[in-house]
Length: 543
Image (cartoon, rainbow, N blue to C red):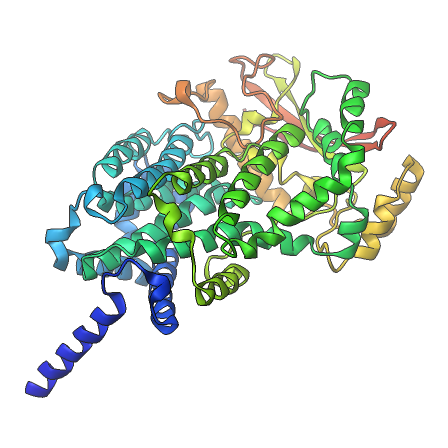
């Protein structure tokens, strides 16, 4: 027993040496710095994996009116759920510290605003989405709890964790249809999980590891930009890609639809001479992100650059990554604040090397999405036309299918088309093909390349799932003739702003079928032409 007691005291002393309260981390031994960072990242990885697995509900559970109730029922039926319960139970040992105020944490006021920016954006987005016509549920209690816990997060930091357990089951319902992307949500979610990991260390050590938190948070942010930059690191992309072509491609999807084709091309031609500078800027703010902590001013430059890039993407494409803009801007302001978080930007050489490694290795510990493509002189877009029960044919904006409209717009419906489509799935590996596609200037060249190199074609299994989803969606529309909820008046911005939210041509009319079309456009500096519009699927509603 005495030996056990002695070893326990030695372990406590060693732990205290590792996590002692000192305000000058750069002066510490590099090994101690690495141990602290590794500890924070280790807890983050465990929490991230547990939360993602434990909150993943089977789709039949969303037919119930209360998602969180279904989550609680499932929690004790899986190893991941039991592990999550175990982690929460262990935290109760530190009951006296659980309700600590933000002001009692080191730099707690700044941390509060950063966490509120992330929770606020997520709560707004996932409490105001359209009524889910597939499950025929509004899930109003879950939406209300998200907004309630936003207030509780403002009050005490402990409520960040239950907020995540409320949010994630709500988000998983959107993965029902193939093509859902976590891109919009990931950076904010992972910021919150990292904070919870830091708070877990506070419970044990009576000290929030703000120095390590800022270091790892910066690497987390930078890695989510570096990974897309790495994906673009191809000589063919750098030499040949023409970023300005993203504008007519977005025009095909109804972005800036109020402009004529000639007006849109005139707007695009203004940016043609800037193509090289735009590519240089993109590669700097994305691929160059591994240098985030190289100099104390670089984090400010990168954060401002990321915000500028997102605003440029919005102007060119109508894709609004507003949540990322909010957290990037908030962190930038907090770093600029006098006597604020900016003092942690002076890193030792050992920390700088560590930060570079963490950014580059992000694909393993924080798994950012790699977003990279070539901007081609052609595009595939999709349209829908509905037939009402009284026989009227009306155009149906794809926003009608919200909250699954992302899959109809950004992901596309190429799996419904009978013919293959042209696309580059590997920017680096398919550079030779990209060079050929970038040279297309005529309809004949396009059709020839499509026949020779097109991929895909109709996927029968996915098409059957699509039919079932759309049919059930339409059946519930016919019963309800409405998609609003109590929260619709304060709805968050759409990620994709190409398609109108309102349905003026449909109104409150029952539908008996919807026809889907693929529209192919060919364009370059001087011309824009829709070269093909073909029907790809008709879904009828059982009367």
